Image (cartoon, rainbow, N blue to C red; front, top):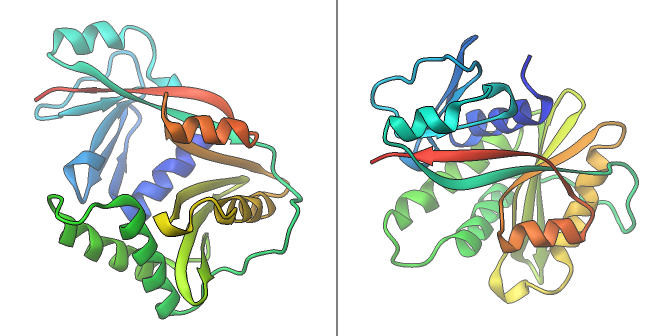
Length: 231
């Protein structure tokens, strides 16, 4: 049985970043962009498929994988930390999930402003992908997309995806000119409300500023998921 936190993350990847194929031995994530693709072994003796460039380990992968991957030409890369925080009541006014295409496009605009640099490779592709994913998912019954505006301008966002008792927080972002106003804190408070009676989770890169931020607001590591890559 898959860990409930991992299952939530895989549901997000399937909804927003590509497709997920599961078997008894492994999970294959096929991303719309290569950076989202990964193979996740679920047994110690699963066979690494030919052509796999990224392997991600989870607690159910079993022992001995670091040695096997090194022998196959993989090198250690980033570590994704799955974190949890207490769910339930939170201070402040509730935030309503978006309910219109205009707000979905505004959600995507914040993603582009927060995560992309003008002129970077594939900038136009990412912008279009953000819009398409927001329009496709904002009505999904298992998801709530949140958008805060400042004087009418889309300013900050987050997304909560529910799988059983787990509520996963994704796409926490604020436009640079609106940072430091407590907008992300308000959105995280809404995520806590969404997770009432269950579990609240998110993922961050180990050692990042984001990890330090979430530790400061009550999230704690649940487990590490090391990544390995080969060219």
